[in-house]
Length: 426
Ligand SMILES: [Zn+2]
Image 1 (cartoon, rainbow, N blue to C red):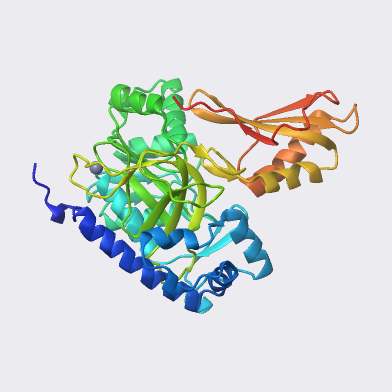
Image 2 (cartoon, rainbow, N blue to C red):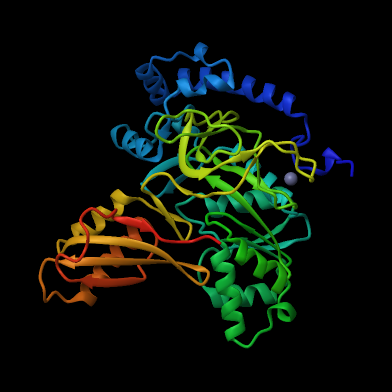
């Protein structure tokens, strides 16, 4: 079937791969020059690596640039607060500041909204839709950005934010909501709760489409949502540090089309070497249409591979084959990164724990975080300690520890990683 580019959002997603490649390389060259001039942190990183903007002429030249990771951004922002030398516009022109775990401070810049709008558009969100946005509206960028992006597509948005399952249910029924934006786990929680309340999801609700990010959509969960509850599901891959939406699914669910606003590489996380299609490596992204933020070659820590094969939807952008796991020590739990260093600070600062392990498992459709701890005093009140650690853990890492297990001294293996991801995505 012929594809009508006009039906897409704000760019021609059906240009030939050769034209796209030329555009991306032209954008890359300009971006490197701009970032070198206006972002002191990027200039310093490039100088340290002995690379000049003129050295980056092709996609294949990118490995000359160092990979900058979340931990680097956190460290640079501590040294040079608040933006770490990545802001390329006057600070007074920043309309909003977002805070991501780390903490990392990031400015809002307009392209972020458009990028998500394209993903929502591909997922079928349009004028006439009534959508609950269940991402949090404070601190992190998700809630506000998705709200604006949905409005770009013409949809009516109900800013329900995170949590409050019963209010979500009532709102969805009262307003005849037909679109859901959130994590797959939270939608499953809502459905389960509705069923516990004696409601019939198919009869009593109107949800036809759901859009997810922040958490992997397991094929088994997708099957339940699509087949049992007749919801069209879509997902996007987003990383906040380099700007937001990086790749998104089309209606074919055949991987995530790379956004035309980034040069995306799959690299060996240890060497930074570019890997060919089909090989699994770390996703590294360089935004090329971002005049406010000079971060180049951001190593996301997420593992994927990509394909250059044609997609039946007509879009010609290469596709990521999904997110396969984490290369670093930050583990995503219920949509939030738990950074090893932060978790360590919280747990060890309690003063009562001598050794610990954090385990991430999956029970049903939900990530479960278990803290196994060896305590310094044998008779320590475990409940009080668990509560104290959890309060601080939630404040810092934004997720709750589900289970607190006190281990006997000497039981925990000193050599085991402090955070272990035991989830299986099948
Ligand atoms: Zn497609």
